[in-house]
Length: 510
Image (tube, rainbow, N blue to C red; front, side):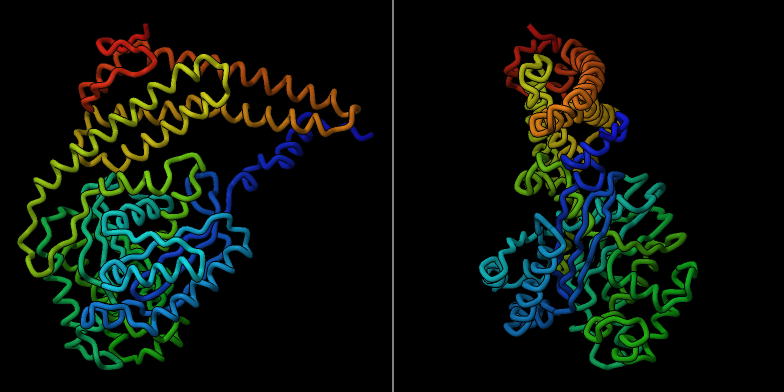
């Protein structure tokens, strides 16, 4: 019999029990039902905070065409959308996606028959679509961009869709402010662009409309970079020279080119559907208007966006907050749709105060749940105690991530870091708990001749676990014995004493 080394044997057991970096990641599909296109990305977590894309699909449906005039989704386009979603669902399942998550944006949420459309989608495709508002759209987009882009400095992310545009201002990766604007390539095309190729005055009208909406926003300050997300940015870049630095001048060169080409010619040149090429000039006009208003030092293109954010949400540890939990706090980003008819309504003081109080209560509750779970993890009688603290701390961090702009950095950042440390402190123990469970299962099924080798592996992992657990216990007891609980009560108004018996005055356990 061949005698494997411990390292080889451990590797093989990890593989057999789904413990490799690739195999432990569940495959999921994320679908974005937009006003112009329906897009899908199939992927799994890459282990470094990003997504390993396995497959993708895109179909131009123009679901939102005519919506501003009728208030309804067109029946023919509904049929096309449903057929597209049936194909996407089949493709996702063929690629091994165990979960399909889908969101619908501006067109569906604005249409009077949007609910009827979604009911049909659920019945005919099995996909349960979540309608998201500008708040969630911006939060998911930013999460996707953050996973694949360097966001140091002052950055504005622009996600230009068919019916709306999300503008997200961030500094060193932290959201400062975000807005959902009633601007979209399809929406402006329907309103202003009749000719093909478009006429200069039609594109000028698109840019003027976009400028009026953007200038009604509170000033965003100096901007180092404008990052354009989605199809508009990607297709705009295809009309430029390769590796060309992008600035406002190059964007205007693209507009000049689009004024000379029909939609069919654009579609042929950059290999996109003609229907998508038809709305591209208005989308590029929005980019030009944003750049004119913000004066960024440079413009960049990012393919990561809402679907990447969705996949990161879906592919997070399966025990992290559910989509319903996430919906509770996604509105924490300061995203308020701008009333196009009343651009002067920019004072969000009352809304921000209400949001801050809501998030204060939510974060306080999340901290209380973490605090109550820690003694069970310390007791060690049930290995799920460690797991429960990790789940609770991840839910806490998710809420604190989104709420960060609403609280003073000086103390909030420190507590945010503590939440992150709690998750990390339990990770090594939990990983070895899972591996030990797998090893014992493997031993019970293996021939007796292989038991000594498996036993050596079990002994090795148990030693590693003991060391990791000692470090975990040291850290958690420091938290319980320190002033953290008192600070949490003061910062987040936690009134109920934790069930573990912590003294609310000094954070010590009884």
